[in-house]
Image 1 (cartoon, rainbow, N blue to C red):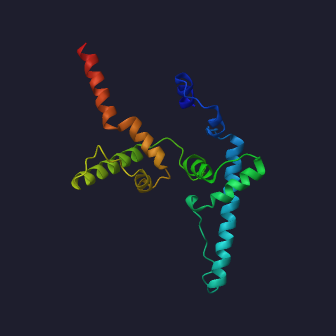
Image 2 (image 1 turned 90 degrees about the horizontal axis):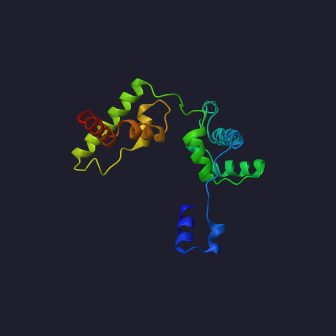
Image 3 (image 1 turned 45 degrees about the vertical axis):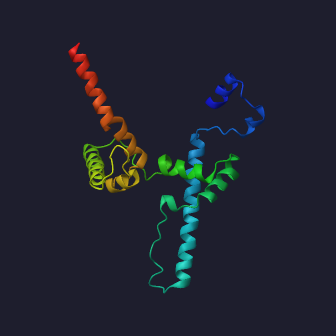
Length: 188
């Protein structure tokens, strides 16, 4: 939308392209509920299908093993088609996967970070940066692998939650600028 406004001001706007401009539409509560229901339906279908395949190909002693379908392994193409069918609202499989795995999944820990989690997060980031410096990489040019850090925390945090907490509270540039502002205010 900003690009359109800028082009309008510069006189470079082509109205023929307007139908192709994609805008983000926030998820409503109803859509999120439908998304969670659709994921449950698809996950159950996938589990039943895998159990059937397992019982067809193995002995009866192995057939009682439970099958777990993780959030990222759900068929989000089917989820998107269920949402479109039930809500008459188009959401792509990618949008469904992103919404579910980053914020809607019931398995995500949405509580406030604990002190132990924060200390573990800082230690993991420090270890990653130290490891990269030993490999002759500049830590300012590389970013920690937030997916790995989130999984090593083992508290059901998303990579985004870890990244956001670190960037907003503990990033060195933020700490340095805050320290400089505090020093400047003390000097005045």
